Length: 132
Image 1: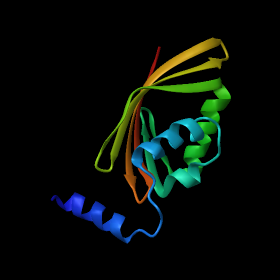
Image 2 (image 1 turned 45 degrees about the horizontal axis):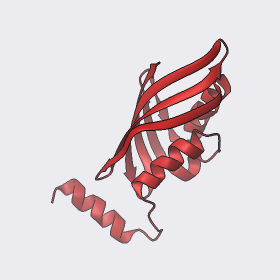
Image 3 (image 1 turned 180 degrees about the horizontal axis):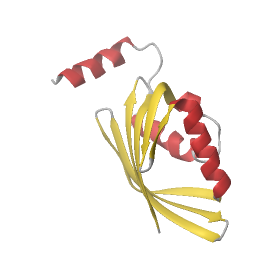
């Protein structure tokens, strides 16, 4: 057992809240948070860090602003999971396709998400997004 696994196991044993599965947490991340529900504070830790290709986002308030701005720019934003989610320890990965209506018409994006989970919340996130 690695030191990291031992720490993760210790956290799970001492936690008093019922843990949500990593896959279920990812579904809430994609379907609810990115679906327009204002639940960033429920899903991510206070010290959350999200890594987008052009910037880092810190904390649930800043994350919620990113989600709200994205949804404001892309009306009718919808996601379909194309691959995954896959879980390995405290990591979750998936590939998705998003569609929406932008200022110039229909928009299609593809992306990859990697999330690190601790104590039932997302603590770190990496995103790769491409048009088309």
